Amino acid sequence: MKRQTNYYKRQLKLLRANRIKAEQKKLIDITLRGSDHYIFFNELSKAQVVSKGQWVTKHIKTAILYHNHEIDKINKMLVNQFKQEEKDAVEKVLNQDPT
Image (cartoon, rainbow, N blue to C red; front, side):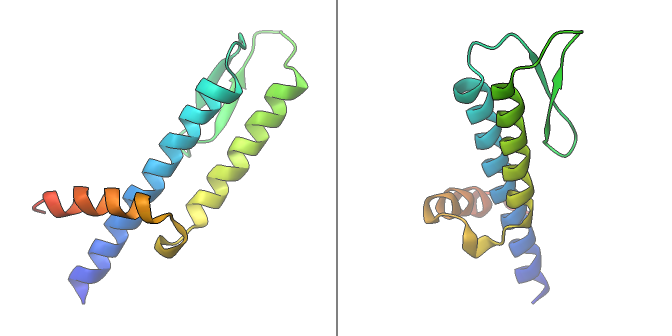
């Protein structure tokens, strides 16, 4: 039983990390493409705008708020709430890992 709970925790951790990486890439590459502001991700993977006295447009504020909301939702998700493709990718990684 102990092994199953450790496996479940590792699986959940990897699923969340993969989804957070995808959300960060989506924010930078798609949503905020072409904006000239520096986006910083803190240790909780939430986005923050670093601007030196410049105005931050409503579009950027809204995108960052939406991103941070999605990160909060991801951190509350369970294994059964992820897509099957994501689960399969994590299964491959976990089955290759001998630990």
